Length: 328
Ligand code: UFG
Image (cartoon, rainbow, N blue to C red):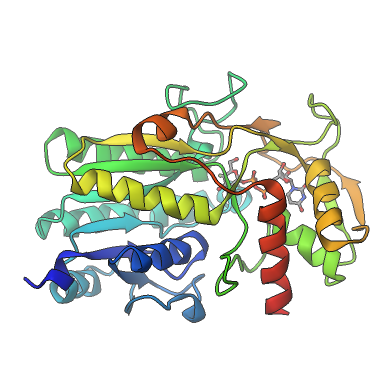
């Protein structure tokens, strides 16, 4: 096996938002990211730092070919359906894609003796918070099929780990946002449901206004609080997680957030400063399935992965705005 092959990582969903930023960072750290993506939501333009294998997680033949060709030393698993609201409407799709697809991937990994996985998990596995800051010991009681599907995959991977077949790191993201500092890649979903890109659309005049989903929550200004974490900070955590596995660390799980919650109104106000003008909005009914507050304690990642978020809210919004302007 060549030195090159020894550093190859299979990145499912590598053509997507977080996956592509991680591919860029993998490349910069000397790895070859091989993107495995069915391109249902991913973008060709986002695959710049390694080969693309176009295939679905359910397609064992193409997956096996990817393992034969590239012999990855580890897998980073992002590919999934990711919209909370849609998961409530179409739960079967979420269990099929997220659980069914992961089962197939895990099976192929085991058959190919690939034993290390960094799994893209989510704050949605916790459900309604019982404490102000959510740490990794918080009970996991998801309140929507998206969160439940991710938790099921965690459980399946854990079971494979118990029988010594795999080692894992679960990374539970809070609200991923922002874009690449070089403005090469960024967030681009169709349809867009996430707050910050929608704020940018309203700021640019590409949307008449944005809707604040509920302003009578039990929060300081009545709108929901979220923990917004820059996608480049997430990418850095993935490299640390991978390297911990490669150096023999035991399986582990980490929350990734900043520990600071911002309300929807605060996001709009901060975005107005970045874009330099008022952004039109209207208060609307609550969105089903939205917990009022979701804020991480990321102490464990700080202590055990030596990770700490570097980007503040202004940097997040500035990068998102630069990316938005580049696309239009
Ligand atoms: N929001 C609005 N208007 C919009 C869009 C969003 O007011 O047009 C609000 C939402 O109600 C929420 C906040 O802005 O309070 C953030 O919403 P996003 O849709 O951007 O993100 P979510 O918090 O819903 O989703 C995030 C992750 C998911 C994860 C979920 C857990 O993106 O992967 O948290 O609840 F599952």
